[in-house]
Image (cartoon, rainbow over all chains, first blue to last red; front, side, top):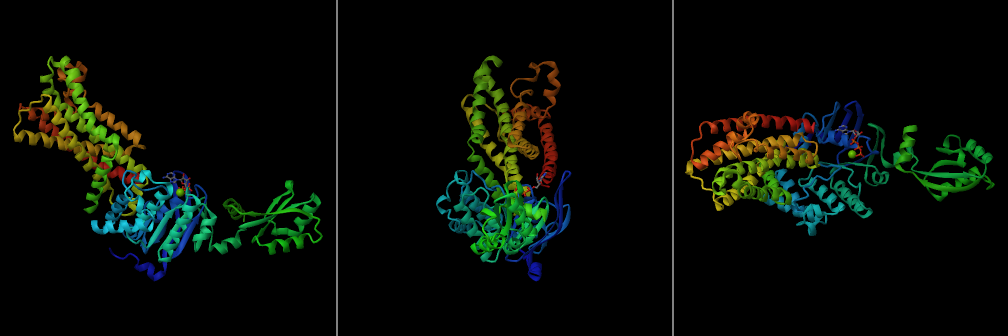
Length: 317
Length: 248
Ligand SMILES: Nc1ncnc2c1ncn2[C@@H]1O[C@H](COP(=O)(O)OP(=O)(O)OP(=O)(O)O)[C@@H](O)[C@H]1O
Ligand SMILES: [Mg+2]
């Protein structure tokens, strides 16, 4: 196989996308996506249902042509150098891409053979992967009998029969229980540790935070925020301190004191929200500052921001 | 070339492990044969002995076509599941995936053909063909299988769901009835003659029957050949086009 990774070794980018657009019918699904991922880094594309995550992945993995814009993956153009790009990547899509009627081992051997390994090497590789993904005991069982977590692990293993330079994982943990999710995180961590570039999509902020060097937030076909998890958190209140005021007068007084610092206002419930890091120190300092006499604030609660909050905040800002 | 072998092996394995496909491909043909010979045979020709010799080639064709058309379902399964994306992302050509299904279909139907033939011989089918006749009949049958399998693949690419793709199977299952497969065309109502004489299944059946029974076959084999090649000439580019359209 010719090494398609020459060009990106020079620039250091494993994935570079500029102004990607895509429409289905009259619906503009992607409205100009710009993304760059360094070799060996993990990028999480975070977005709600219908944001365009799968469409972005399909374009970057050469399965769909963009209407506009350009993208290079592993040094090759996703439209002009399709074969080279395909040789350097692997894709584990949102929905399982396995034969239910074949066993786990047969699936892996088939993928390895299709990647060009001879029969014997394919069998060896299948056994290695089964071992690595804790599927050895289930190797001889049909995939139709696997649990959701086992299926997802096999699905990811099936993408690793040859060591790809860039691994695409479309919502690898959706539908998994907490333990399987943790196992998946370890897998992604190990891939990144071995120098593989990982592009994953997720709907969970926590997951993006946990796994990614860079998080890009996608909303209705546009990247509305991008940066390291820490940068994103600074930009977006990940946690919020919600103060319930004792009276309307107290509400108005504190509202004036806070000014632009309040990111959430619910006058009917007399609630004001302020971004916080969740530490006791921050809460104490804030309460002391706003209500030194201890008369205005009735209750407070730390509110862990959901993805919804992030979106609301980002789209309002 | 390795991909073609790998994917054909895969498609055969999938067929072997799908109980309803196996039942349809292996048991149904034999049942149909018995139904025709023992339930209808007496009524149609007085004795079931003579009728088995008339009808066995018809049943062969019916089953071959039916089994081949199941390619529509297997292809559609692949296209609607996630696996086609994985194959494409691995740079596996679409033609290798389709060819795998078609070759599996041919293998599956050769097996069912042998079974039907064995049962037919056991219940009184007496073909008088020499080696040449058998070879020619086998060749036409094989070509017919290929043509219908590729047509089935096209139907599978066209159908939105495997259930819808199953509709093609019914169409193909029905086609041999208004032909000379089970009763001579003369016994049908006049308005059907035109269709029954000129539809593709008729020359295939006529030539296979004449070749196996060592009777004069006229130009039926050539007409059958033309039909099959014609269907292939349409189905192959159609598959390529439909595949590209489907994955675009
Ligand atoms: N082949 C297609 N034809 C028509 N519309 C499409 C097609 N693919 C995607 N869409 C539309 O594009 C939009 C974005 O879809 P996409 O699958 O990329 O979103 P997503 O972020 O992956 O969502 P989810 O979290 O639900 O997987 C959706 O409104 C979807 O209906
Ligand atoms: Mg998606």
